[in-house]
Image (cartoon, rainbow, N blue to C red):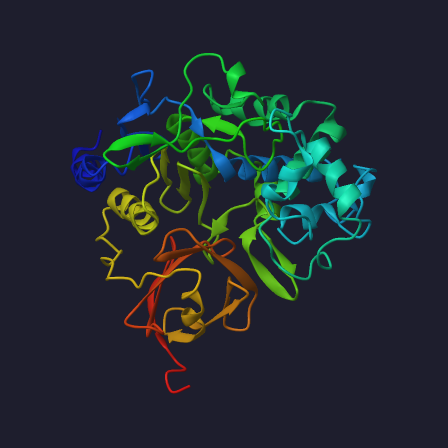
Length: 437
């Protein structure tokens, strides 16, 4: 290990581990070579299994980067047309105007979250992608909005994209990923979970949160057989191989990568997520994606200009603002850059009843105008005149905004005078611009 990097990363991790806020693994690489790798805490407390860099962890939405890459590869081969209707590949799909591009650009009008399907399945009934699609066909004969007219984060869209890959190739989705990516890149600890957790072979990495002086389960849901948006397990070592392949250009051919890095236009605005399901800077040289699900959180970050990558996986419910701060600090540590994340101020705490006070317009040089609206308890933000995004409370102080991948919080009174926004590429404090209203 690079001792300079190791000392700095160890100093970042030590207080989080001591506070029972982090268990998992971190792997940092430069030029395809690992310069730091370490596991922290336990993967399974009941089984006494320690976390190592080779421990498989629930990857949550990291799976989307593989699904999007698979689609892009098959587009390049002429086997999938992004602008063809989904019904060309899935005749049972109920919305005739939806295209494959809509599925993987979060602009499809499908039910956005899996909780929608709970009333339609028995507790011990396995949920496949085909079964979810049948529920949509029965209960949602029309999309919730005109496809392509708005951004709404969509897990089911990626599950259906994976189903398209299965129909086009005649392979199971896990087999497809293994043939195209896992085997070629040496990702030996990457696999699809069994639908029933009771069918797990060996000891599984469980999810936890520290409550009342002990680790309590905050685990994966059972009976999930849908693949594409999630439900793959990866070790930190394997995800480092994926990150390195994206950093050095070997994950996909240059033609496939270049085409996939383009951003879809949604309601006349560019999506914040590329066609390969990466958050990328304006140069396209830096990209990353995260996967969060109950206690699990994962980061895959790559930098083509520096040929560096940062990966961590965790199963410990790291507090939200510390999550985005750790992500940024690990990148800075590897690059030898000064810490770019300012410390967190004292944020205002909100309940559902008081959340409306965050509504307003905030302004700052780094971001521009940000408009926050609250309607019937739902919080949304718009940056400038761009797309509008849902903002979900992930604690009493912090909101998470999928799409631009922003973590936002507020301070200085009620209504709050300041909005704090942090992502991998943004760290800004904005001042309320409508103070006199």
